[in-house]
Image (cartoon, rainbow over the protein chains, first blue to last red):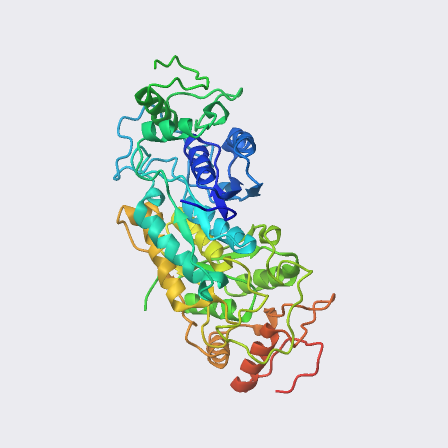
Length: 237
Length: 237
């Protein structure tokens, strides 16, 4: 696939999945415009991680946008009074959407992405949603992405005037965490820069017990690679 | 139609259209949760208008969200270096989307609306898009709204778990400006509180020549009602 000199907007959270997606977009030849959101008080570490990842993978621009999702509340990730679940055994059950779900988050993120894409003349947007080893969030499903792509192609002047069509790329949507880690490793992602934990301690060390840590640790274990980050609990590989 | 005790999120810009939509939602019995965005430096007057309108129509809550669309640029409404067109004669031509178009604006606004709706338990969202007397923005078309409604019903936990379905109400989408003004007048909208101009002077007086003023003046003239706001130019009714 050749995308030489084509621009892509890549949503970058600072976690493992989006770092891998950024590396995939780079490997396809895109010029990378990374987009990160500061949307809740728990995510300082993710932002720092995102900055390092964007730099390490040669993003041309990296924008960090402030959005006040904490004001809406309704999620353990933006409201410190809601507990982050630990040691869950029913990960990924579609009937049990966990309290770390943030209302309409990916819809808001993708909306900003198409705004930026339109202004810089990009028609390719990358997002690291995953429908296999995931937490059961509805806005990570392929049917959501397809519906949003349709919105992008109706909402914007560029698409309405048929100059081009937007494509929402979801290169890891059908990968297991193991496959994501193996892909990223091959493409040179430095996973020591990434941050995944929903509930790190004050010094930034990951808890090892929230959904995000558990999925990450399981992925590294299955990939046969040592997770380069530190955890509060002892982790076996 | 009875919507007693049902909550609705109503997008409120401070303009004539959204004020009318707020009054329509009220007339249908909804509890009103008005949502306004502060997204560009040119819109101070709209925010003030929105506050007065929300109060006058008994909104239970009125939230004003800061979003930094000016950072993206690409629009005469958020970038003061781009001229607001005056005295256009080709209003509403689908081939000519004017520079006052703001990339992905309605997509971003509706994304926030579903986030808030989900948190407060509302499934009804009202937006004052209009596909008749409009400026040719792609994200005002019925097909855009239908596509976004589908996104809302895939993106959110509430809809994914089949607890309910979101509905995006567009009560004025097929009305002429004349009909909008007649409808709002019947429902008690005080149009002296509304602000429409894209390019008012320092004292807040409307220019009378931008697309928004021209559509408004034409609507009042056709409705046979005197527009209660002031203009920089002399206007005949």
